[in-house]
Amino acid sequence: MDFTGKVVVITGGSQGIGKAISFGFARGGAEVIILDINAELATQVKDEICAEGLKANFVQLDVSNTSAAQAVIDQIVKDYGKIDVLVNNAGIVSSKNFFESDERDWDRIININLKGVFNTCHAAMPYMIERKYGKIVNIASIAGKRGGGVFGTTLYATSKAGVIGLTKGLAREGGQYGVNVNAICPGPTNTSMLDSFQGERRLNFMNSIPLRRFAEPEDIANAVMFLGSDLARHITGEITDVDGGTMMD
Ligand SMILES: NC(=O)c1ccc[n+]([C@@H]2O[C@H](COP(=O)([O-])OP(=O)(O)OC[C@H]3O[C@@H](n4cnc5c(N)ncnc54)[C@H](O)[C@@H]3O)[C@@H](O)[C@H]2O)c1
Image (tube, rainbow, N blue to C red; front, top):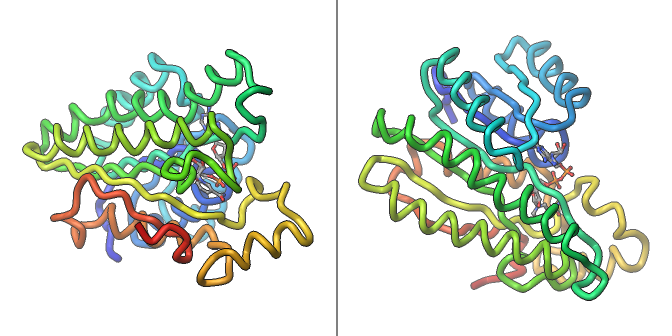
């Protein structure tokens, strides 16, 4: 897919799925800007991308900080002139069940996973609307459809269900202005988030998936790039599972 001339902003791009998304767009010719809380890792990824002769930059951001997100997005538009694609990928998982969780756990997961998406969309969408062009791809999770389950518990699932709702609402509001808003629901994907699944537990988990494999980060990135491209110009408000056939809904 050709993203030459496109400016693509990716949150949580310093590792795992976000890193694959960053490389994917950069290899397609885009100018990639990684927003991440982890300055060290993000700088490494930026350097790795630039070492391939591709274009990448990094700005440190905690996505849960509303005013900081606004300032960073404003600055990107000043520096690059526009944002064509925004990928909201930054997220954390909680392994605590509901009754082990307290208000601090709730605030942390909702503020990063859900309010973080609100923050960047709220800051970036007006610029997209002004140009009558924009693609937003939010990374939710199949946990947001299932209420958690094997992967992710109630708080995580709730935050991702919120991302699905936000995606559909923004798609309705943004459509008339040429802004497409879609979400991906990954199933289990080979990143550090799955570190707790080892041995027999991992095997049983894998055998419950019709394709009998976990996703690689690139499998998710490929779907994100499609939804971020003009090939998907007539798709909006769509919640796309990339899960080896787990959901089939
Ligand atoms: N790995 C899976 O199995 C899986 C399944 C479904 C959905 N997801 C979702 O995919 C996304 C990426 O997950 P991953 O597996 O690559 O996780 P990861 O932990 O490898 O990467 C998460 C990234 O988000 C960044 N981040 C965390 N908090 C942040 C904050 N407050 N502000 C800015 N950046 C922050 C981290 O620094 C990191 O770069 C997440 O939204 C996750 O919920 C993952």
